[in-house]
Image (tube, rainbow over all chains, first blue to last red; front, side, top):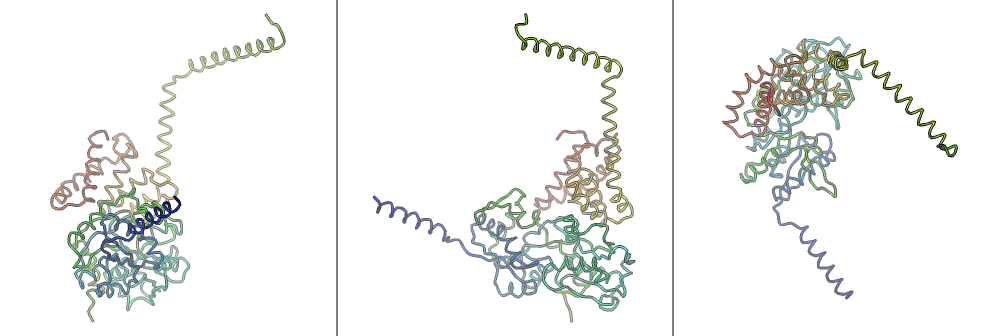
Length: 297
Length: 178
């Protein structure tokens, strides 16, 4: 009897083991790091598991540094990509990546904008006042933390390379918050900050609306974007897009013994299927600012 | 009749209760005869409503001022700040929708305006000082034909949601139920 129980238990364990090793195809999704690889994985692994469950594909999440993204994507390292909208433009222009869906978050939904701010009481009240001042930007490939403001300055007759005293980019993680605090604590006169980060910091009570003058804000353009490598099966691409667009706030996923809300765990409000032409505003900005993928030397 | 002290005590308590009841009836009756209760209720209701309107005007005064000066981004930030204490408050939703509309962020503007109307009927009530009927009417006239044509040309879940919200607002203006 004891032997029989042992055999039965062994068989069950074997069966469970067989269920775990799936014969589903394995594919990789490269996620652009915002602050750190750890944060990226924490945010996007539940969403990746949800996509795996829905599409019957074993998706693996890969955190990728922004600067390395285009090169690793071109090297065929991932089938799908989640990047900011400027990196999407690079992948689209250079590797013919297919647009899937755009993330919705904050006041402008699937769109975002870049703002230029100064500290209230600094005497810097208009965009023209930034001439000769110390300016801090976000990272160079950030569309709403660098490009939008660089372009906004150019369109207002200010050449950031010539007309401001000095400009810098912070190091390490949480660059957008560092930019805001640099102005708050008088380390710089003016900051280039994504409208979304200013909104989130205000909502969190880290700063107040009365702390800053908003000297200008760019037009809105698409926010973070999912895209696919050009050789990925068209049917899978279509289904992937549909799963994202259909995601709603109550949808959950079982992940590491917990039932998690998919969108909330990824800090996302939803997805929208935009057209590639919706990115034209951003294209024009990148061309005017001589930024990739339109940079000319 | 009274067999022991307990009976006496109980009878005494009963008398006290009867006397108190009679006193209450007489007192209440004389008050009711002095005031019209329905008038009292109407005054209380109007006072509460005026207090609400006045509170909202004071609370959102900085947002309105920024909006009137064309500082829409700063007005949104002020709303973000106020939403810490009053999350999902109807008037905040209305103002957010109004500001986003002025910034031509149409889908989000429609979403917030519909949310505000769902939370409070004041915004479609002609008699209310908070009414935004003309703004909503104009929004529907300007956006509905455009969005309907766009929705026919492309399948888009977000666009459908915006259309649903516009139809909802249209229904509320017409006096329809939810």
